[in-house]
Image 1 (cartoon, rainbow, N blue to C red):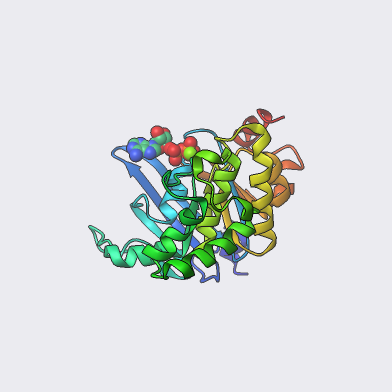
Image 2 (image 1 turned 90 degrees about the horizontal axis):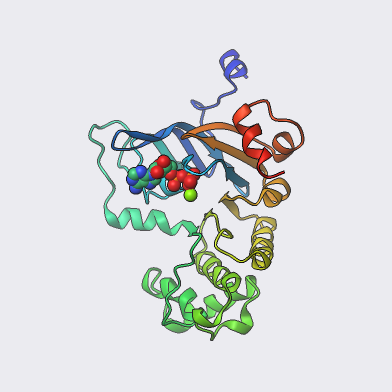
Length: 270
Ligand code: ADP
Ligand code: MG
């Protein structure tokens, strides 16, 4: 390790084999700086939990990773490929064509707090839809793949149900199956259990744990500190758009955190 790395702990100028690498990324909404100078790697098969107070920028960071929000400064790469922009240096920046962006987004699965299922389609067709319309599979191929994905979230017996006839936990598992079916390289979860009745949270977390055990790379914004403590490889803490720390959960939860912002936040969960 060079002296410089030893002192600042940063590897930001060295190449890495991270699946997602974020470098000095910033995001503004008009005059408001929502994200400042974020540098973060997500390694292959890693589960990274993102925690922090409401309004700290967690959703914005997640949305910048797949360019649902166009970040302003710095860069985000997936497997080394710049996301969203054509290059990092031109000013103004030139966005990628919609076709290229769509291709990039196929590699990144996203699961939201609200499930956004099509109400007029069965669970099976909700999962099959993008396989047919985006990936170009035939309807029957799409449904075969959708059945496999529904099996992974333990919903084989609900394939013919419409969303209205599924519990919130089951609907969220359909949404997860829909993302899995596209075979993404990484999955992003934005508070996937926050809209659920408490008794339905466990079934969704169980499916996510199983995905983690199978080696899926996952970035999970969550208020489920038990999940962060037991499933995450690292936990990142965001405050006022800044990455305060990103460490293994034992370091964050196992002892009194040094940073007062982290301490205050975690106290609300004790
Ligand atoms: P979190 O997910 O941590 O609760 P967000 O990423 O949703 O936080 O929001 C971070 C900050 O950015 C908040 O102050 C929020 O009001 C602001 N923000 C988010 N989206 C927009 C937007 N589209 N326009 C203006 N401000 C926004
Ligand atoms: Mg949010």
